[in-house]
Figure 1 (cartoon, helix red, strand yellow):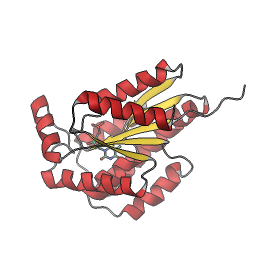
Figure 2 (cartoon, helix red, strand yellow; figure 1 turned 90 degrees about the horizontal axis):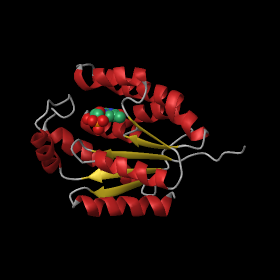
Figure 3 (cartoon, helix red, strand yellow; figure 1 turned 45 degrees about the horizontal axis):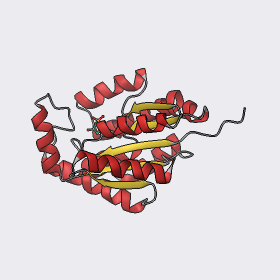
Figure 4 (cartoon, rainbow, N blue to C red; figure 1 turned 90 degrees about the vertical axis):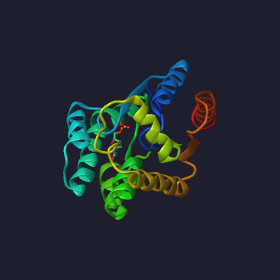
Length: 207
Ligand code: TMP
């Protein structure tokens, strides 16, 4: 049978931007059209990737080690999960992908983005997301949302406010470079308004 390739949808934003509930809604919407969906995340998505996630979120390390481990986890994720599912005609809904490395390790940590461009070319030169939702909001509001959850913070969430400001700016810069693929969603609005905007964008561009 000649199976057409599935679509690859990613979700990005600073910590506390509120992606999670919208990711689940998007997966449900795609399923409601009779399509198969794999919902996954980065870093993570495979047994090895989840072990690397644990290290990346809780173990201090050299900044370049951090960037390379993000891409190592991604390579495994692409090989084990993303590429086979797309080839079977299934859709991928993924919480973060390489745009997060540009934003966090590039913007946040200040590493040279040319280095990521080389790793990106190596790891997935042939594949980019079909559509990316960037949930954008001021870090001060995101920080309040995280604080209200009252849980233990990971290494990225513990970073100072200026780190999150740089991550946000790097995301917005990346969206300006790829406006067709990366759609900026104002995440400082009522949930229902965000849900409608996400749904319309998905239906118009992919379904
Ligand atoms: P999450 O909590 O949204 O799943 O993301 C885990 C953290 O990992 C989040 O703070 C962003 C960070 N991260 C990076 O720094 N670089 C990356 O490439 C990815 C995928 C995530």
